[in-house]
Length: 99
Image 1 (cartoon, rainbow, N blue to C red):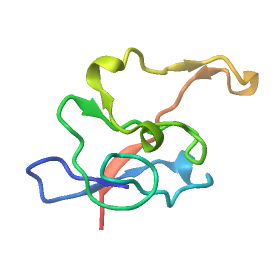
Image 2 (tube, rainbow, N blue to C red):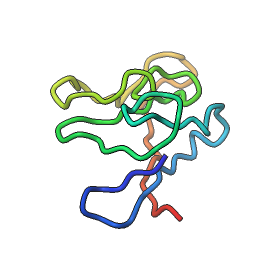
Image 3 (cartoon, rainbow, N blue to C red):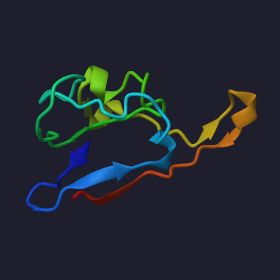
């Protein structure tokens, strides 16, 4: 998946080491932002593209499409379960220039 801010010629890809070993890394999206198909699309103003932490099984923007800014009410910073991963939630994702 790549993103290109409006008015810029450089596209970026999301680099997240947490996704390296997860299934579904090749899933692309339709112009509506849903799973299946490929193509370039524009995220509408005041809307967001959300990707879950379980790349191969999350019901996120690949399933529901874009989310309105006013529908986002929280940011995940801390997890309780599973107990083996209790604590703060790391966010190793970054945007890097796409080839």
